[in-house]
Image (cartoon, rainbow, N blue to C red):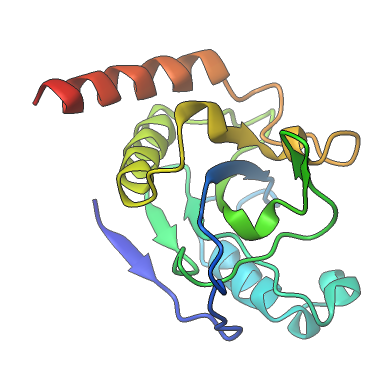
Length: 180
């Protein structure tokens, strides 16, 4: 798996927190922007909210996704998972508020008109397995959608993401790795 890392302008150490979950997000792009540099520019700017007019309300926060998976299944690493990557807004999971510092965010490119591609599911599974090996506190039950940690405020990955398909593929990959 090839991952391109983009240096974060907001480098900050996680400060002892152990990563224990993965949060799946969705980004809808303007028409014609699939597979272009738009996403990279957007996320670099989100890492520095003052550079992007739509994210001025995030000034002073560290906002990012760790990874982005485009429609072709290409994975771009935006922030090293060992660095802090805060996600905007409130979050809670399993009774713990503020779970974002413990979460790795993965953005998927897609819309209801452009459902997630087979290559994206495969890349997502490969990436999650790699992250689970690196961070043993992550279990399949701790791979959730953005809507699971911010209900009422977020809907992604949305109804066009097939959790059943993803969980089936993830389960098969984990079993194959255990046997091999």
